[in-house]
Image (cartoon, rainbow, N blue to C red; front, side):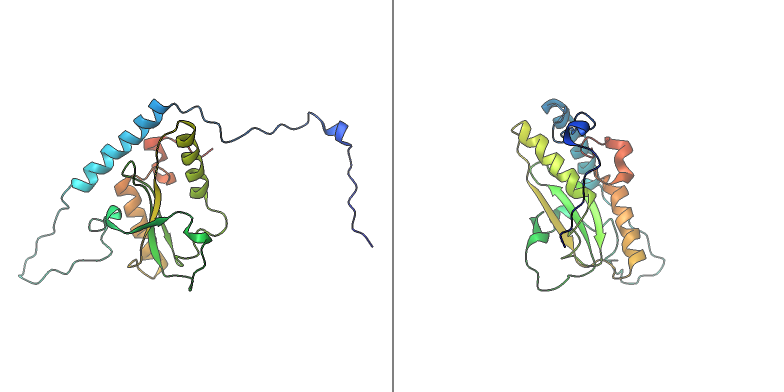
Length: 192
């Protein structure tokens, strides 16, 4: 028996009922894009150059650096890889990690995320993948360079809540524009 689903309406009856609008055409001008990126760069440069405050000690004990301190983690110093890493064959599911999406051409941190399995995080749906596609598209339209990469920090806490707290602290610190927590600062030109 053949599975056949008859249509309720003919093609002529459906004509004009729906309209497909392309999502890859942007009205963001080259000047507006450059201004958007420059504002983010200026803010993140201040963050990168700021000297973190050090807590004084009452007793002369050796200070131990907290590896999960957002002030000691520099996303720009981590080794980067292609943002399409998730398509490659992996030997394992990966480890708990924080990850950072960076446009190294503009030296801006676009997104901060956390995962329990670093080699599997972006398989399937992820809003940031769409933002990156739109970001690339507008650069391509205006023939502007962008070099997107992703960097993982595998020393993140293995427990979910501490890892998420650290992720949020880094999102707030760097004001990464693709994280919804920072849309109020930078707008949402690539989320459509």
